[in-house]
Length: 111
Length: 114
Image 1 (tube, rainbow over the protein chains, first blue to last red):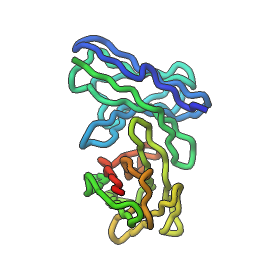
Image 2: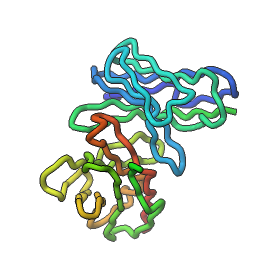
Image 3: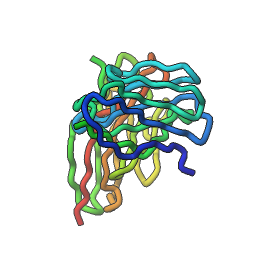
């Protein structure tokens, strides 16, 4: 049971191009999250969703947008990628009792 | 400012030795407390959590953590470390005021030497 699938797993792009990362869950968990992981910063919340079309900002949301048109999919979009957005991005869902289940991450490099 | 602090960036222990990873938090009310582990190239996995009650909680893989309100700490321990425990460890909280937002510490990288 993969639980959460992130795509693409690796992407190299150029500054100024749009990028969309996809998170797909096999179960219908209400809460889904996007985090970025950077050395020295741990994981920082970008956006989260508490239902279809219900999203909210996290602590580092500038330059990112999200959409959730279906329970199982949560998309993260960088409208115009910058080098500061080079990072590893993790999607997670909330499985009750305070537990997060994470995908394997998407490594994004912005040149 | 509200925060989760892991003072040790990197720790090296010998296989079979005991381990303690530190976590301190700064929130008005005691948040919900968690420890997660991340193996190289993987996502994070929940080790254990504390909501209330007994201040010593047991987790998976032989880990335990102790909540100390007076010290605002939630330190992770293991009596005897195995080489497979080498990973990155993250302390995390859910502040009771936010409901469902996790905040993570910066992580402690554990190296295990033979």
